[in-house]
Length: 101
Image (cartoon, rainbow, N blue to C red; front, side, top):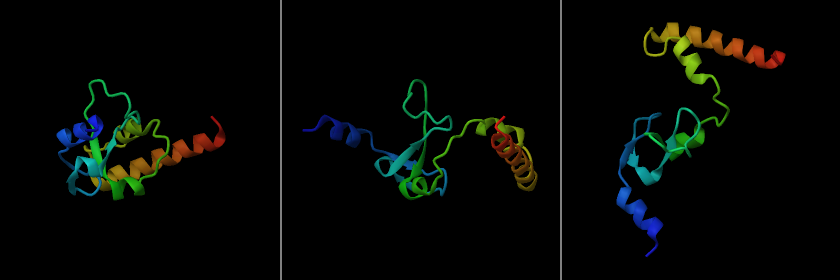
C-alpha cells in the first residue's frame, strides 16, 4: 500500500472554495495562503480554491496586497467606497513600479 495515498484518503474532507462557494473534496481543491507561502505550514490553517477557480487566478506577486486591502477599508466600508479606494491605491502602486521607485 502506498503510504502517501493512504494519508490522502485518511485526511480527505470537504472544503469550501473561497472564490465560488462550492463545497468540494479536499483532494479536488488547491490550498490558498494569503501570504503566498503555502509550504511553510507551522501554525497555519489554509483556505481553499476549487481547481477551476484556481486555474482562473492570476499567479502574480502579492507583495503589499494585505496592506492595500486594509488601507482601502476591506470589510469595514461600503463595497463602492472600498472599490474606489482600492483602485486608487493599486493605481498608485502600479505607477510607483513603472517609475522604478
